[in-house]
Length: 300
Image 1 (cartoon, rainbow, N blue to C red):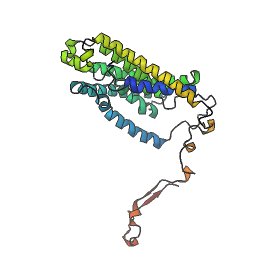
Image 2: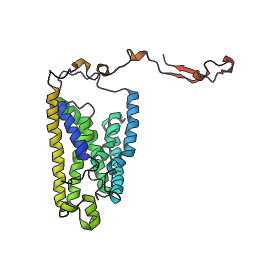
Image 3: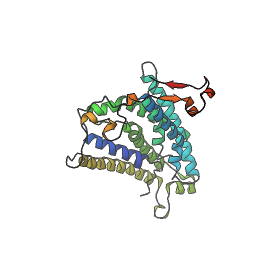
Image 4: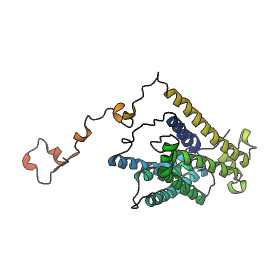
């Protein structure tokens, strides 16, 4: 029914997050050991590179299928503003939540992107710059707060194991994005968009030509509810299928969080030493050509 969601706040983030969370709830393991549920320093550094690329190119994702012209320009600008606000808020709350004021890598990797998630629906609308900043500010708060409080609460009391924190980066910002999109659409007016702008932004053409912004806002809210319903119901169906003992061989609790069950890994990772050989190119050459500047650094 012509629900606008160019950046997928509802159909991608909200649906996908609650789909996965529902499956996690059904497959909950009360005796699961958390000793392997973590990351190492170099993995966090590489993951941070991914965060930087996502941050830079998220505006292109939100604006890709928006209305060409003004709609795409607004989508890119609004997304950047929301991302900037969520970055500042995430850094501030992460630092304030630590005893020594240090930053948590998980917060920075994820909560800094929450503004882009929430701006997916309303990015092409006339939400105004301060509106985008407010959305990003709220997302930075709820996402970082989610990692600090909500994720442990969900695991302890709701029996939902959220390994990667999708509830904090995708679910809550996605729902917020759907709500913001519905409100922004309902309050749209021809005096702000202009007649042509209003028609192009919300696609009020052909059989939708008589639709009003208020009606569009209602359809936007309905679209959010549909995304939630499909995610939860679909996740429940798949979760119960995965629980069937006749079809799937589940790993034991001891093997969870261990890549060796499904992937080839080195037999003894500790025996693989990181070696930097500057003079490897000198192999086979006259040893007189080698000088003290050629070095080999080995970690023992």
